[in-house]
Amino acid sequence: ITASDTVITCTRQQIVLDGTRSTPLGQVMYRWEDNMGNPISDSSHYVVTKPDTYYLQVITTQSLCAQRVRIIIAADTLKPVINISGLDTLDCRTSRITLRAGNSTNLANPIYRWATSGTGRIEGATDRDSAIVSGPGFYNLQIDNARNGCSANANIQVIQNTSPPIAIAGGGGTITCTNTNITLSGAGSSQGA
Image 1: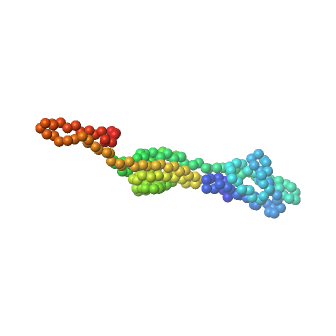
Image 2: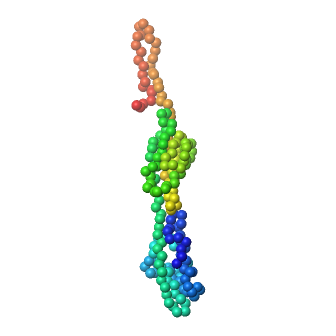
Image 3: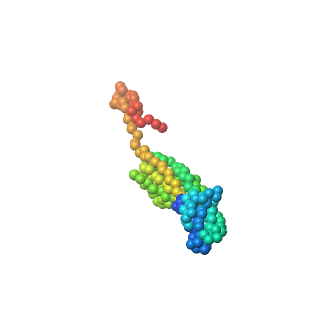
């Protein structure tokens, strides 16, 4: 049996098994079997889409002698895990924040791809485990597993709150010799710390 590969991945979702190297050429019958010995095809080629053990039984047409060989197809479809951390709000004191994905995956060589939409802005590199952002919007991180082509995506929304507080000093008046006190009130001002 020859095979285009022996490992199914996210980018290689099928493998062609080839029995045509069997001899004598043109004078054999093919019987592909699953791991339980059940027949699955009588063609010279068989397309595999899941990991398992497969068998090819080759039978000569004249003497009916048979030979059985085995091939094991494995799978490597591990997708990265994404965890984005960091602040998610820009305000008057924080005009830039760092989004981090450093603890996302334990892959040996992950490939990071940050992107944004709307009014989002990424400052600097977009291919690291963190990104500095300076605009509100949706930010997307894609991590690729270079070994098997599997990838995962996650989004985070960064909002912006730069509305100035409302300051009202109500009351007031004129201080005079007879009116020596004036009461000022901030009752109409913004609430908060």
